[in-house]
Figure 1 (cartoon, rainbow, N blue to C red):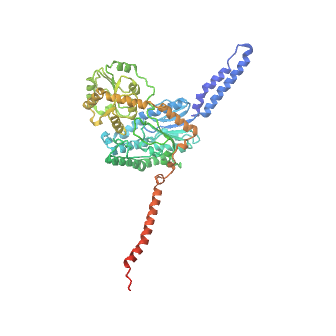
Figure 2: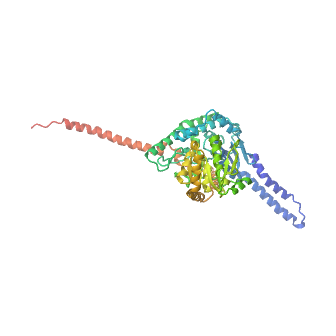
Figure 3: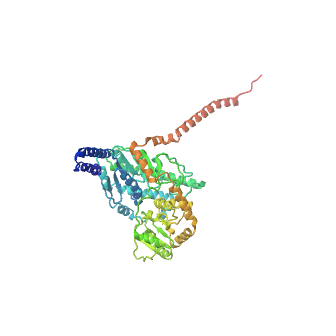
Length: 553
């Protein structure tokens, strides 16, 4: 890292030195000009030294093997790098290190994950049940953490000297809480927690977020805020199941994992380490998501990835221009593949697209073996999705319901057909249905017939596009770009070495104190004491009254 800082400033210093070596040819003014140049060189050198002194070292801990999370996180660390910060980044994706930006890349991690799950056939129908969805998500986290624990990158970072100075740690708190041991390993720099996973259900453990299960649907449910009695009961049970499983099963495993990685270190419990978050950045926006009370240190930066620069190949531009009625983008994002639908469904879909020659279909598909493409279908293994959705001739997105894809579509006013497979995709798709800008199809019901019905309805009913445009306006109209807002708050944490004044006092209080249970208990004891005293003193009086005999004359 220190070598990187040096290389980033050496060019300006060299430039200053060269200015001093210029040979002048102008007689009597030579000495005066040289004096001015010397002053300028000294100023340049001073600025260079100042930039070295103020250069902040940031450790960015990416924890989840997801390309979409990497895309979202990348917007943050690239902007921080552009602002002059020096970064060390744990990454699952192949990236090239440059001076001031060092990547610690985990090679073949996705292959290891695939091998770990190969023994168990994936049944996506189990995710449609809320309990199964919650359990499967934590099983994914558990498997990924178990592999991550033994990666060379973790040992490499662990080998950094404890005296090495990091001014900030950014942690993707979606999973991998055992990596928070690096906070105390590097002498407790401020912590910023981030997640591209909307507002995860467990964000409440990082910040003082009040949980109202009576109107906030659990991400694994398909409920709306206005729930009937039975739905409120179910929703409350989902929340409690999630909280109990995380706190009593998942987090104890993370604690044991942290002890193994930082063997011999006397570390604070992982549940307490995550509470040190000075700032929490979440991928949500009030225009799109359910109403939720959030404290001031939880900042919504939904859609910060949308305006990233993406190049569209010339061939794709020509394909879009050639479609007489516009194009339909069929993309299941980075974590789901069209091949998961099976060869028969893929064949049916190709025939459906062939029968709609007035539309062009851009189909993200990694395996076209044995499939003959009609001229109105462009099949490609990678799509610059944000750029395609920003094109005015894109009429519809067929998506897996991933949050980043839906945000990109809504930002650009494009209606959606959602085919959810797991995790939050079910609630995401349900929300677009309720908002009137899309239609959902269950993954096990996805075929040419159901897709054609949904496409005909959306492409021929202008209300879907009108609603998408309306939500696009609400989403876009913000006082500043979401990425600018994220960077402002991160740099404020660095400048102030934390933001303790934004931190709720409840983070340091026991639950019984937060909810006043001790006060209720004291009141009940007082009431019970008065009751017992009254009962004791009233008994003899009544007994005496019953046993009293009339006086004789």
